[in-house]
Amino acid sequence: MMPKSLLLGAALVALNAPALADHLGPSGVGAGSGLNVFSPDTLDEGHGGVGLRLVYTRPNRRSDSELQALAAKGIAAHNTNYNLNASVGAAYGITHELTIAAELPYVRRDHLREGDDSNGVPTVDQLGSIAGIGDLNVLAKYRLTGEEGVRFAIVAGLKLPTGSTQKRAPSGDRLETEHQPGTGSWDPIIGASAATKLNRFQLTASALYQRSGEGAQHTRLGDRLQGGIMLSRHFGAAESEPEHHHGAHEESHDHQAAKHDSWDAFVELGGEWEGRQSIASEVEAASGGAWVYAAPGLQFNSASGWSAGAAVAVPLWQHIRVSHPDNAYRFMVSLGHGF
Image 1: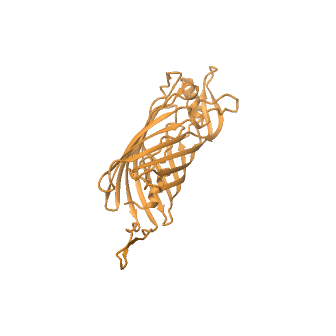
Image 2: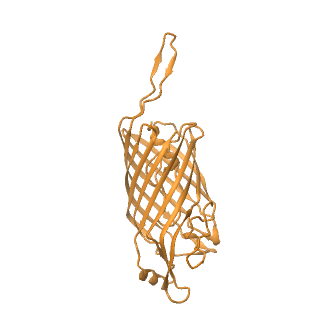
Image 3: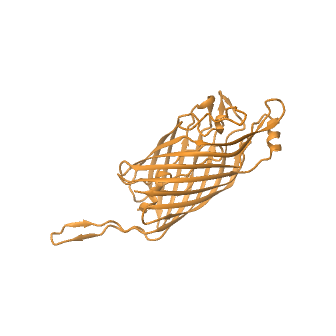
């Protein structure tokens, strides 16, 4: 059994900020500390968790001259100084096998610039910094196996169009949907996770797929697939079993399981793929792509139920089409509490 402090991660477990687009991807539900990988474990019935997470994505920077050169080829490429996603999440155990979770992000894109040749002369539009509430993810995870051996769970959910799609550039023009905090679309999500314990290690694999619907301004962002494998190692005493004391009448009294501070170290090998987006049914050939990354990290689990984690992802391989920049790195920190 994993320490209860690990399970509070159900509020915001798979900490996703896709590198290919400017919107949050689907989140996993259950215990786990990876960026995209989440475990099949569920919360106990009647137990829950809340949490905060912060994901900072630093793209490779392109100069104005590079954006102008792409605009001259008819490619409206863009760049930001950074993308920031701050999310609040909550999860609750409906039964021992079923956990539901929701996560609402706040999105900021700093110093957005985009190439433009609409007037026949390649220029770079300074679109400013865009910030606002993003789209809500609601997910359910159902565990199909017990808590021993290889564990397996399935995930299903929906991304709701709660984010703003009306942000405007300094010129007053409405920004394209891919640059808005929200998308305006309803997107179904499906996925699965499997894990097995190897003494104090755990090997976990998971995947989530998001089918993008048509959203604001007749825009359909590309479908997304994300997942990977994660090896984690627990440090510190595990929770002890409840003690049983028998009196003269052989009545048993279960005492609360002892809790201890602990650490978890992990390394995730993950990847993300995003399909091409379309506007008014016209596919943008320069959009979409994929990347593979390695992400080491740590999570501290306190005896009182709090946890704090951090991880950094560095690219091992990427093939991101030129409308979006390549990734330099991604950094995540999280804070949660179980109850």
